[in-house]
Image 1 (cartoon, helix red, strand yellow):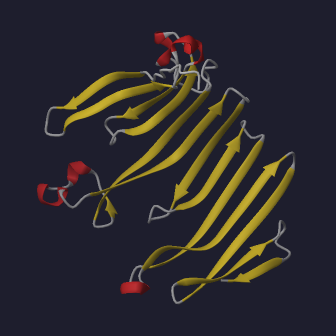
Image 2: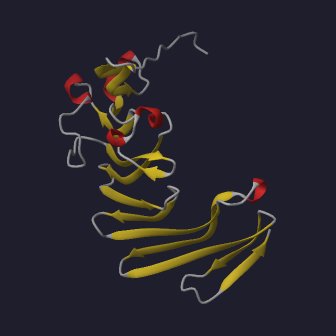
Image 3: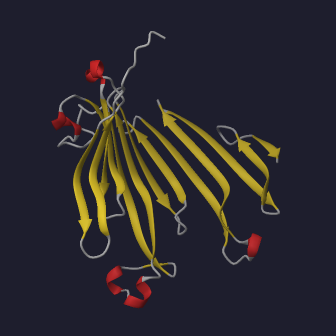
Length: 232
């Protein structure tokens, strides 16, 4: 060691402090950002990572981005979308929010005061857009769910249809079971289909169970003409 010390720094920025005046109190900041670690002689290397949350929906992250800048005005860009080429990366998440009363989707306006405390909130992402301007790749992923909010089908589209990846899941549920015989979301089949350059490649995995444990798995080849089964 030459006996010299180096001080590293990291900066933080915040926007939109929000509070709830009817009981919830302070909800936090609508937008936040932090820089990468840097030293005083490496200011130009700072990368900023930012996020925007939906204050009205449990502060879920709806937009995330990264940008290389020393301009304070660009840390929180006015154009927060995948069209902003100044961003290194961008991510946008859209959610589905359901309010459930005894397993049934309800609107809060029609629930009486006594039942409001029984409401369960289910929140799942339904669409995720990711854009990288470093390699010019954009993906959009759509997710559908069953009644238990387990993902049934996930479709990822890359560069507006240049390639697609589709994953389909089949589950087994036993909601009337007692004790160890009760289960939800037992995976039975996972099917994957990839399409690109006019070619389609498929894969399928099947599972069987014994005494509530996976007893075997069967992996099919790309055209489902043959398989390999493994005992667990």
